[in-house]
Length: 207
Image (cartoon, rainbow, N blue to C red; front, side):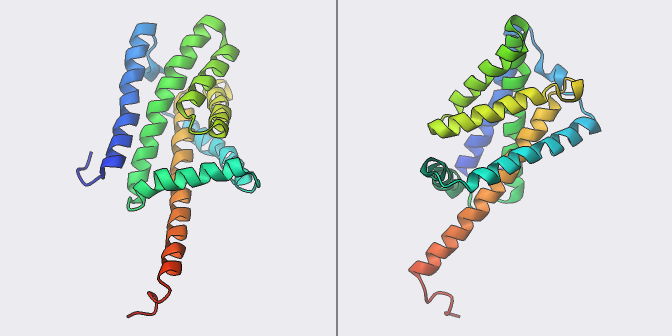
């Protein structure tokens, strides 16, 4: 990883990458190889890209809802995530989103969901995995609920088109995170620019 990356981004990338190791180790214990289900195919990539659209539509729909709890999530992300990534390029955000998609999907869908499915069946596997996914993403209760809903969607996508392929949820997760990060960063920079303009109204007039 390039040494130019700031501490926050490095730590975030290392954390997401470490989930790959965690998935592998838990997989050894459960006799599950998560990489077995990562099958590179054009169909899986296409399915993943298309299946990202409903999540994006959900995001934009939620943005329009006039609920304080949803606004609080947005403000929390802008202040605690975007503030640390404001100077990062789209390539840096792509790296972070890609690692999140790979690491989290290998762990949750590639190991935990399959492990539980082998014992209690697919329905219990998706529900329990989604509850665990929600707990890990429990920034706020509403955020945890949204994370659980997304996890159910990702869990179902594992067997999309009657073909078990972990690449599909990896693509969905990574692409969704990448687009959301860029949209949030755009909003953050717009708000920051307006704030600077309000605090320094004469700055634009100076040569």
